[in-house]
Length: 385
Image 1: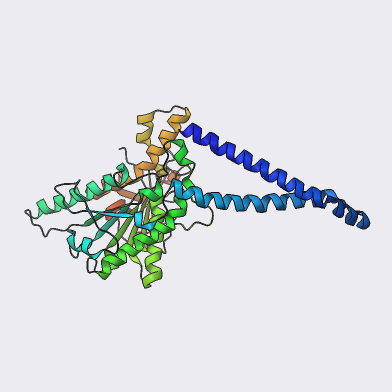
Image 2: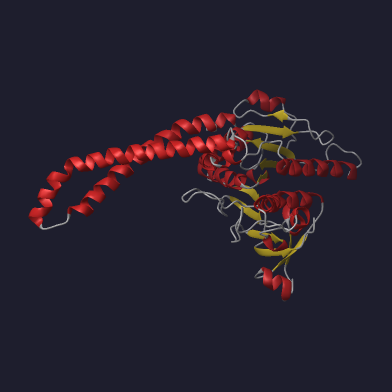
């Protein structure tokens, strides 16, 4: 299927380009005689003017056709409807598969949900082509539920033990094109278009919780966005700030994704009181530069994570390289899930080279869940999992 889709897309582009070229060439030819007379009287050369007319004609028609095709095709390939964004609460630490849907702006669904009063809300957001059942978000969700059970056992089985309201946002219909394999990746920009749409709905959902008493304070909100979901988190935090003048407590961006188009709004430190980033695939599906209050670089931040090398080897085959990057990218949510159940200490250093050679590690911080909100700077650590 992917090959046929690519073929028809390429064929359509070629045919469209030929049509525009013929039309514009004919338009230019009609005006050439008048143009020549004007240019001969002025002593100028009409060839550059003709090329300019052709370029303007081609450009204006192509831009119109492209925007028209995108608006028609995008709706068929991927949804842009915020009502297709789903919110799934996982209320039972004994049953990690039990879910309850809380429908945005549906008070009845919220009243039926078994959320924990006065407990933090952990809202987990997946990335491109994923859904609520995808492994990265499931790893984090399962770790939180396991932690809830551990807290309960540590307090003698008390149901009042510290816990969380764990919600997974499913924006799969807006993130996953209706094609498989490489064909789906061709339409990545359509998912990017939906980032502010989904971010706004997540922000509205948080305010819906607060309006109806399920959430008492925005400091109780922790958004955890993987890959493209990091930018959704940033847009959600910005939406809340625009609508209330307040900002949420925390955003964690495991594996910040760099592939947004120029002009797209990215996650920033203005979107929450504390923004921490985990970099595991810098230079490929992630970036190296610091964009949070605290940035963590496990195993130097990549681009390839050591555990992935042992799994996929060091082959230069194209498929192996893709799998190495995908594996390394996905290590960020995995490392974050580990941090929920055990503490991992990192050292503040000026660079990976300094960390490996001369960093005294006089300033330390915990990666992930238990990171202190006052933490600032770049931190390095080794994780061989």
